[in-house]
Amino acid sequence: MGKYKNSMIFWQIDALLEKYDADVKTPVKDLPEEALNEILNGSMDRVRIKSQLVHTSSDYYVTYEGLMKYIQMMQENETCGFGTEVGGTVLQDGDLSGIVEDAVE
Image (cartoon, rainbow, N blue to C red; front, side, top):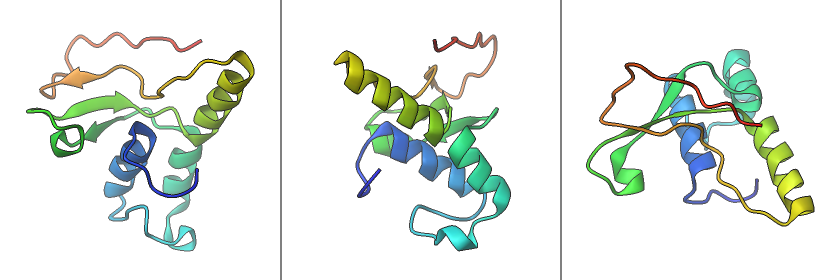
């Protein structure tokens, strides 16, 4: 992944690590196994992207599909010549009611 970038995948990992009282500067050896599993494989919980990061008036809630899925999609896009942003369904104003999960195929 390289150096930290101001992009959705880094925001998602940051948001995921918050619940473990960690951030992207925390050494991997200090992260709980559950955190590492969620970083690599995704989380069933939606993660909150703070409004300040995306310069909006409300926070975003997104599905985090994991670093493995992100890398796979990046490789597929290089082969196809397409670009994509991983992030799942974006919700505004913290409204989680009536959510229908979009399938990513």
